[in-house]
Image (tube, one colour):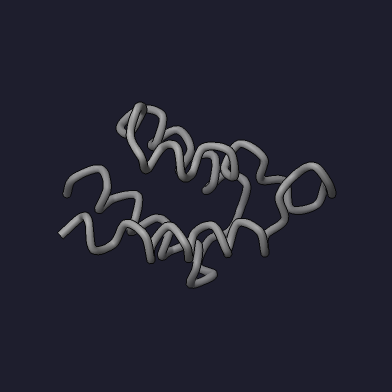
Length: 82
């Protein structure tokens, strides 16, 4: 599986509610930094993943904020990975 397909799979896992933990998002962020640095996918995801703290309040991102980002990411990049 290529890196874009892998991060899309992770995004779908977050969207489904299977895992929305800080640890999971941190693993997504590590994957993106390792495999997708200097790509459009990295640019799309980096800020949101680095700010994901569902309990912390502004300026951090809530679970709902991250859910919107993941849905937008899948919509934007799913057709590009085919």
